[in-house]
Amino acid sequence: MKLAASIAILILAPAAWCHHSFAAEFDGSKRVTLQGTVTKVEWTNPHIYVYLNVKDANGAVTEWACEGGPPNVLLREGWSRTSVKEGDQVTIEGALAKDGSKRCNSRTVNLADGRKVFAGSSEDNATTNPGRGKQ
Image (cartoon, rainbow, N blue to C red; front, side, top):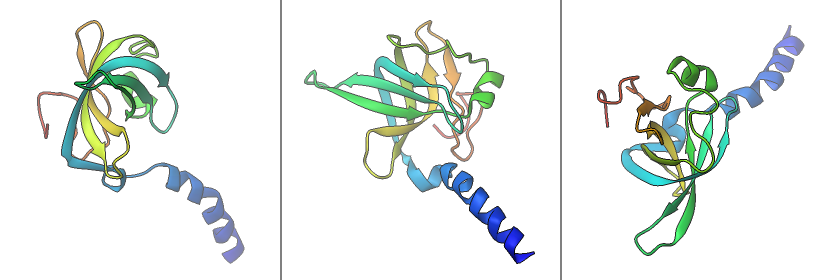
């Protein structure tokens, strides 16, 4: 019995480590709005990532990694693999990473076609209606 429990822990521990809580990596009190050009989209579990080139006031470009929800959540929200594509101009609103890196947890995405969609944020009180909940 102990051997089976030990094996189960060893098998499941990496999966638990990969899927993190919002509070472990992001600070809900530090909001960011990023406008930029999509350079890459990773449509994978447990979260999608949208990478943006964002220009600052001086014209310097910084790449940001913006975490979205799991693909199945985004599909239920009306997303498809082509909702955000390389070259698209988008605006992403979210919460900054606690470690100061150029990462955010996306709450909403203003798509190239003008629609504002929920990004599947793992933040507490996140909602499918971008106009409600904590902003």
